[in-house]
Length: 325
Image 1 (tube, rainbow, N blue to C red):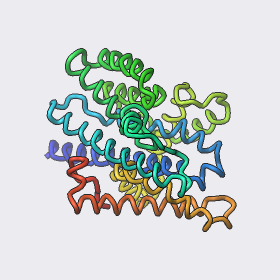
Image 2: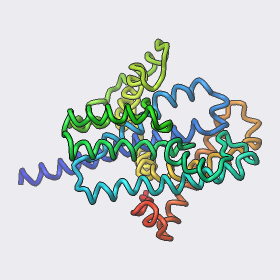
Image 3: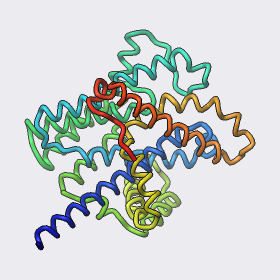
Image 4: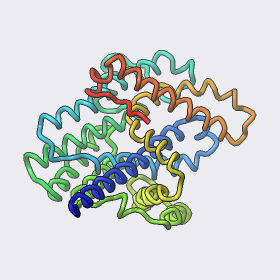
C-alpha cells in the first residue's frame, strides 16, 4: 500500500514537471513570435534586444536539456529526421516565398539567388526562425556521436563543445552564442538537475530586473545574458504556483504545440505586416501585437491539425505534431 502511494506520488510529480516544462516552452515560443512582429519590435527595440539576447536562448537550453543521449541509433535517427526533414522543407518554402513575394509584403529577410545559393542557405546559413532547427540538428548529432563512439558524460560534453565551436567558425548559421545554451542544457541533463525545481525562485524576477539595469553588455555569450536566461526560467517555474489553473493549462497547451509554431509562424509573421495599418490608432502597438500574435498562434495550430489530418505531419516530421488542449 505504501509502495502504491509512492508510485502515485511519483507519477503526480512527473506530470507536474512535464507541465512546468511545457509552460516554459509555451511562454518562450510566444515571446519568440512576439519580437518578430514588426508592430512590436519597431515600437520597443530595446525590449526586443533584451528578449532576443536573454530569453530566446532559453529555447535552445531547454531543447538540450530534454535531449536523451542514450537512445539507440534507430530511435536517434528517427528523432533527428524529425528535425532535419521539416527544416529543409520549411526553409525551402520560406526562402522561395520571400524570394517571390518579399518585396510585396515588406519582409525584412530577402532572397534572390539561384539554386546554388538556395542550397547554400539551407546547408550553412538559414534565414528566419528555422535557424533553431538547423542548430539543434547539428548540436544533437555531434553530441550523440561523441557520446556513443568517443566519450560519455562530462568529457563527452567537453569534446562536443570543442567540435561545435570549430564548426561554428565555418558554418555561418551555427552561432556559438546559440550553441553554448544547448551545451548548458546538456550539462544540466548530465548532472541530473531537475531545472524546474532547482531554478524556481520567487526573487528570480528581481534578479532579472537587476541584471538588465546594471549590465553593460547583454549579448548571448556574456555571463549577464546566461544569468538573465536562468532568472527567466526561475520566474516561469515560480509563476506556475501563482496563476490560475486555466491559464497554466492554456500556456502548457501552446508549449506542447511549440513545434507547430516554430514551423508555421514564419510563414504568417511576414503577412501580418499587411495588418499593421489597421492598428495605426494604437500608438502603444500593444493591441496590434496581441491581435497578430493570437492570429498567428491560431493559424499555426490549425495548420498542425490540417497536416495531421492529411498525414503530411508523418511524411515530413515522422509523427503527428498537434497536441490537444
